[in-house]
Length: 411
Image (cartoon, rainbow, N blue to C red; front, side, top):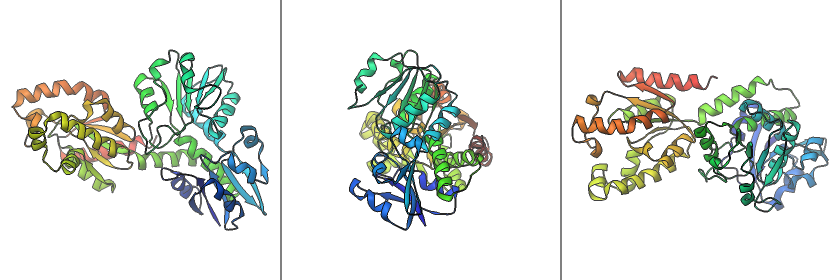
C-alpha cells in the first residue's frame, strides 16, 4: 500500500525524507490539479496521504468523515482510508503547538498577528486560542484585514507567518519589517525551506525569540504516520529526526580573509561529509569567463560584487553543501542573509603574514595594507560567524569544523 503527499508544487518538500524515517512504507508525492484530487480518494492502491497547500480545505468534501479538530479548523492535512471510508484529520495543530513550545515564546494574553488566510492560518488561530492568547488578528490580501492594515497594529506582540512568502525558490522575501513593531516578543514562521526565512533572520538579528516550521512539519508527520500505520511512535523520534534533517540540510559555510585556506579546507570537508563543494570565487570566474584579477582590472570591483551577490544568492538557497566564500562576500547584508538562511558559518583565522595574496587584487600591497583590510572586516567576521577556528594545522582544522558541526546537531 502506498502513502504520500498531495499538493500543487512539492519540489521543496521534506516530507518524504521524514516519512522514510518514521516507517517502512512507500511515500510518494502526488502533484495534482484541483480537478484531479478525487482520483486519489478512489485509487485502491493509495491507503492514505497528507495534504498541503492549496488543498487542505478542498479535500474535505471528498472525506466520508472528518475529525473534530479538522472540522473546527476547516482544514484537513491527513486522509486515512479505512474499510472503504476516507477519514480526514488535522495533525498540523499539534505540530504548531510543538513549534510554540520549543520556541520559548509565551502566548497567554498576548496580541497575535497571523499573516495569511486558509487552512494553515485557521490551524494557528485555533492553537493560539488553546494557548490562551489575548487578541488574535488575521491579515491577508483578500480578507477583512489586509496586509496594509498591519500599520495600525504595530503593537502586536507575536507574529506568525502562515503564507508561502519566503519559501524556496522565492527565498529572501518577507511581508513585514519587524523593526516597525515596538512590542514584539516572538516570531514564528511555518515555512521550513529555507531553514531560516528572511523574517526569522531579522528576528535573530533583533534578538527576538523565534522558530521556523521544521519542528511543526516533523510532529505533524509523526502523528500522520501513526494514523497510517495504526501504531504509536515514541515522541523522542521527533527530536532525533529533527536533528538529522537539520544536519543534512544545513550548509557548512566558510568565511575569512583571502588566502586563509577556505577553499582547500572546504574541499576536504566536503569530501569527508560526501557533500557538493562550491567555491564562490570559482563560480564567479566560471560565470564571467575571466579570472578574478582580470574582472577587477577590466570591469571593476563594483561589477565583481554584483556577480558575487548573484552567485551567493543562487547557492545560498541550496541545502547540504559546503560553501567557501570570498574574503569580502559577507560585507553586503544581502549576501549574509543568503548564506545564513541555510548555513552554519565558520570563520577561518590565519596569521596575516601567512596569508597567500597571489591572484587576490584587494590583498596586494604588502602586510600593512592587509592589516588595514583585516581590521575593517574583523568586527563583521566575528559578529556573523557561529564558530571560529585557527587554521594552524590543516588536518586538525578540518576535524575541528566537522566535529563542531556534528556536535551542534546533537542538541
